Structures are given as C-alpha cells and as structure tokens.
Image 1 (cartoon, rainbow, N blue to C red):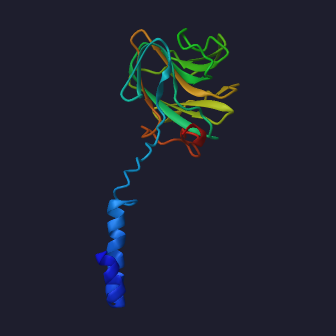
Image 2 (image 1 turned 90 degrees about the vertical axis):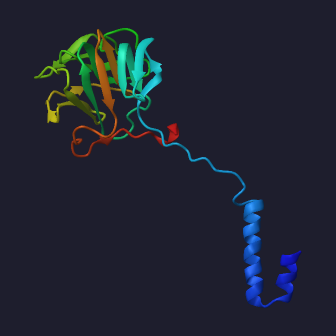
Image 3 (image 1 turned 90 degrees about the horizontal axis):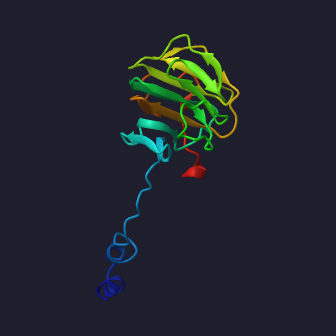
Length: 212
C-alpha cells in the first residue's frame, strides 16, 4: 500500500524509484530470485563405458583406465568425419585397441577374431574376423603412447607422435573405440588433452547432440 500511495502522490522521479523497489520486491518474493535454482546441465565427456564392457573388466580413473580381463567400448561412437584418440601402455601384457560395433562380444578375447572388431594387438598385428590384415613396423612397448586416426575409410596408427604408415581398412557400421586387456596389461585412454598434437584435420571425438 505504501508503494502504491507513493507512486500516486509524489513526483515522477520518486514514482520511478518506487516502481523500481516494487520490481525488486517481486524478484525476492515471487518469480525472481526465490524461484529456485536452474541446475546447469553437466557437459558429457567421452570415456570408457562401464555399461558396455566385459564381465571381468575394471575401469578406473573416471573412465580413463582399463585393467582386469576383457574389453570395453567408449560411451560415444565416432560420428564426425575425422577423429583422433590415444592410449598409453601403462603395463605390458596382452591388449588390443581399435574399433568395434556394439554387437562385439567383449568377453571373448582376443578381439579381432570376429566380424564386429578391427583391432591392433600388443604384438603389432592387425586383426579382423580371425585374419591378420597387417603388422606394424614397430612393436609397442610399455610406456609408449599410441595415436589413432579414423576418417571412415582408414584407421591409422601413430607411435609417440610418429606415423607408422600401416592403415587398417574395410571398417563398416557405427563404430566405437574399443580396448581390451589381459594378463596384467593396463591401458590409459586419452579422448582429450592429448600427449601429441593430432594430425591436421583430426580432433577429439565429439558426442552427437542426439546422445545428450
């Protein structure tokens, strides 16, 4: 009532000030400051998917390290034209890294022995559907950082920032980065904050809007 009387009897300047205070009062008491916080939606990140992994796999470091026995997919497929990701071999053993569909059986090792996975194995061989499709000129060792580029035509490999010029071809379908470990192997996965600069035109895997 006080503010209503003030706006009717006082000068335009005072009326304007009263109206301002009325707006502030509404904000505090009604639809403004006291209306409740709007939670900020957490920006999703690409990581190992604990919902799509082998029964004996252990994933730690916020989805960035795989150990135990078995395989795991990333939580997002490669949908963009050119994608890059890395792994660091923290502990040697039996392991593999590559691409796979969601139909891939992540409990049967080694991967690359079925039609749903295209994998680089710890001994440097490339396998798909039980067939060796190539072999790196160098065998990865404990401590090495391996880079992977995929452009929906070729999967290429890099060791400690150097290209290995041994492309893997013939991939098809909606593909996810896939990783498996056995016999004490431990792999750290990098989907961003890379050890080495990605090749020109390639970037970290992006999550599609439809998956947000």
